[in-house]
Image 1 (spheres, helix red, strand yellow):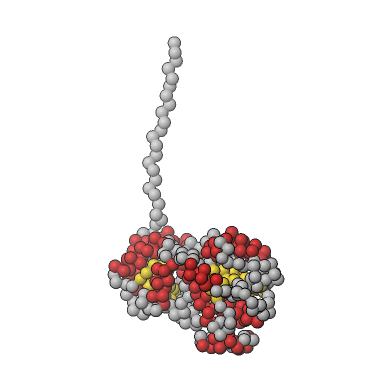
Image 2 (tube, helix red, strand yellow):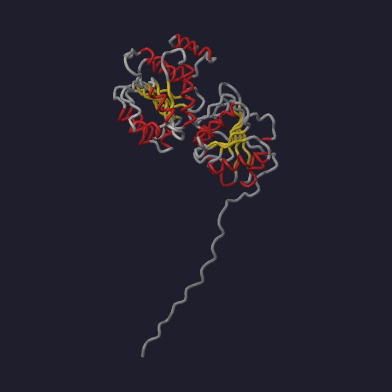
Length: 404
């Protein structure tokens, strides 16, 4: 199938052609017709499946076809809420690219930066707003944003928003937007909380599920290295000596861990930067742009920060630390192997992480191939436990002397 078979209007098709889009991905092929028909939609799709275009293209078309009163300032009619600043920026850029030949304009707002430039943009009038929940609620409370005219409401990365504690913010927004609207909800996973939210805000939704989370992309080559925790940094440097690793995202569990790994790589002249929620927006965006432009070879990231990273040609993903949640492994390695390209996912596993590896292999339904030959094999085949305390001496009973 080609995009022209999806009844997309000429102005959007022209922009898609210039972006090099010819054939839709499975989620685009299934979701776009349903959204254009005005249906609510529940989409379950993991990273890298093309879901941004799946909702941006029909949203632009539907809002372009609506006749808006010419008098007065434009009202916000499309609202996209997403968890991270990086993802908000990328969605905004997609709306701008696909909609450049329409008469619609978009705006993006997020926290961590001054709100003044965002206010200036909003005052000019906006058709489509892309926002993170915290800043959006702040500007609504200040009376700067009005969402009473929303026609299309999109929640993207809903599971990640729950993980980040945005549930109450989302509930506040839903209470303010019109009940008569079209709602699209996208989530990489479908835990009970997300299913309950979907039931409460969607009306007879069409359902689209692409690439179940338990499956990993077949074209991604997976490798496993057993290594002691204290030797992981040396193994990482050893692996990165391979010049075929053009670009790599290294995953750590914590912000502190990301900073530490980035510093260790810098010491041995490997160009690397850390990206996580503790960094300023400017620092995060600079690091991401440098990585995309090839100025940085390695990006060290936490899972929350990486959720907004969209890079088509990423050669390697390295799990410096295995994630606590097995589904996160699938999302991590899905960063590579996009757009039909191959990729390599490398994972380090120390003794204490073996239970995490077992959970991952149970989820994906296969064993991750082990690399036996490397300079830092696992030596400490025992768990890290505290030495038992010596037993306390037996208590002696005091015999009270009887008074005469």
